[in-house]
Amino acid sequence: MATIKKAAAKKPAAKKPAAKAAAAKKPAAKKPAAKAAPAKKPAAKKPAAKAAPAKKAAAAKKPAAKATTAKKPAASAKKTAAKPAAKPAALKKPVEVSDVKFRNLFDAFAQNKLPFNQGYIVSSFFSEKTMYSIYEIVSYAGVKEIFPTADGLTFVTGGKKLYVLAEHDTYEKKFQEPVSRSEGERIPKRFSELEVITASNQTKIMVSKEPNESYGSFTILKPTGINFSMVFYQTPALYDSLAAFFMDSLNRFRRVPASDAKKAGKLIADTVKKSMSFEGQYQ
Image (tube, rainbow, N blue to C red):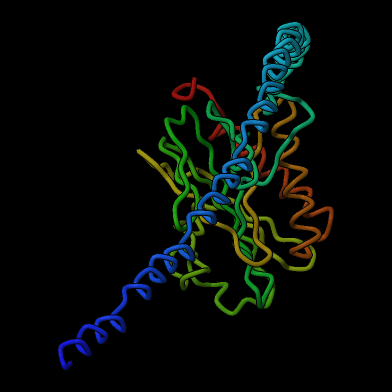
């Protein structure tokens, strides 16, 4: 009898639940994966079919062929550009134009208008407190090089320098030799080496009889305050221009009466012409 019950006990261990486990595999059915197959349709080659119009872009190369015709206007542009190119050749002679008498030295350097063959440079050194004034006139020729420095412009060539001194009537050291005066008031000349004009207001204009010479190179200092450095070009009216320039400067800025300033201007120009003209060693 007991053995018969054991036979009935085998039924609860039935494998039907295991059959359900087999059904559990259905949730992991590949039907969603089948849906993934339609996802390939978005990657359909229909856009690739649209790429076929890209062949039309190849046809767009025809306008590029027209660009070859556009080169013809470019050729004509070269012809028109060639005509203005001839005009700059005339602009290479600004320093030879007769109506250009002088200009600011440092502006002329910046504009490439400094004469290399020959020229005159006039620089001023005015006292800020009195009418005491020094002018320096430098002649040069055959310049090898001009280059800027921290202090001014250096000319690689020899030159001559003429000094002009304007001494107001109340100057305290008027009896002291100019060569022995303090810095800023000194010139390397004695009274015996100077031509002197005494104006009606007792201002004395002293002009060197002979210039000093420099060799190798010289430097023109950058002007400060009301001072200036001007370059004069070689023109037929060069010495007249120098005379007029000094007459105007002495009269307007140093308060020398006009008639006396005119005499001083002529004396300066005559001395420059006599002792600093571009003859002999300058030719």
